Length: 222
Image (tube, rainbow, N blue to C red; front, top):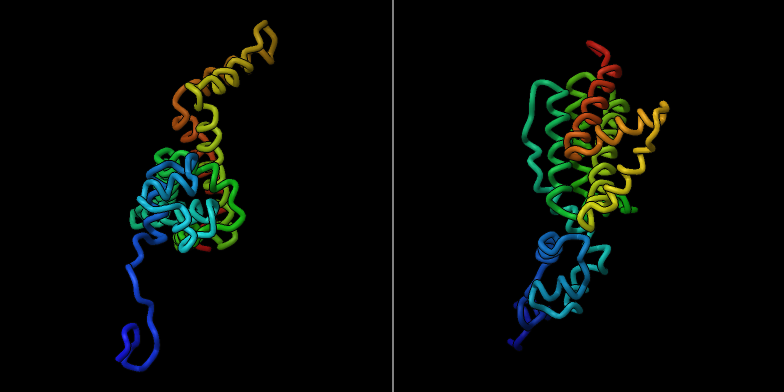
């Protein structure tokens, strides 16, 4: 039998096995940080020429897509609670923590024109759980979309503001302090005070507001 042929006479590829996979590329991107992902930097981390990546991904955007899909798929989707409010809080906190641990992930999610399968599956799972608690399907989708949009937007915004040692955040907060004794000044000073603390604490207050607002959509025994 000729070298490189199968028993059925069909040729097969002969050569070294692939050194990398799409999952390897996604993991490398997450390790580098999505803000710093380039074809060259990913190739260097994997010890291959960046041209080798094109066997598995179409370009930088596809790497970001694969990295987000892999990161979201690893979230603990099994954590549950008999209380739907607590369940939503668990899920939102997991997404906030994921964005915090992976710089650039929240901004990349905002910019995506196509949604990774793991993100779609995660949304669907939360929506289904809310349906089990009595929410109508459309209401469940509205609640989940509102909470996740707010979470990703907040994480992305604060990440941008806290870059460069937080100088942008300082400028934003100081712009609220208009001085004087007028009503605008009093509200501006209070806004500055409330938003000057830990970004996660301010986000948690927004989350509580949305969760309590969602209760208005829940009709008992629906």
